[in-house]
Length: 96
Image: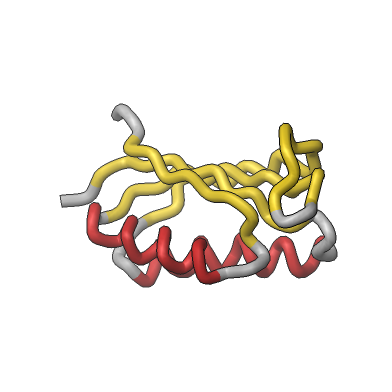
C-alpha cells in the first residue's frame, strides 16, 4: 500500500545550479525506481539557515510531494545520509 509523503531536503549551496538539479533528479528517480510517484517538486532556492551545518550557513531548499511504499522511505533516508551534498533531510507522512 502506498502512502503520501512530503520531504524537505537542504542541499549544499556551494553546488552549481546544474549539480543541484542533478541531485533533485537523483532523488526523484529513487522514488520512481521504488514504484513511487513524484507529485510535485518545489525549488525554494538558496536561503540562510538558522545554524551552521558542516560549516555552511546557507543551503538550497527543495520540497518533494510523492507517494511511495513505507519501506521505500528507509531507502531514501539512507541515501540522503550517505550523500555529502545533502546537509539535512526530513521525510513526513502527509495527510491525504
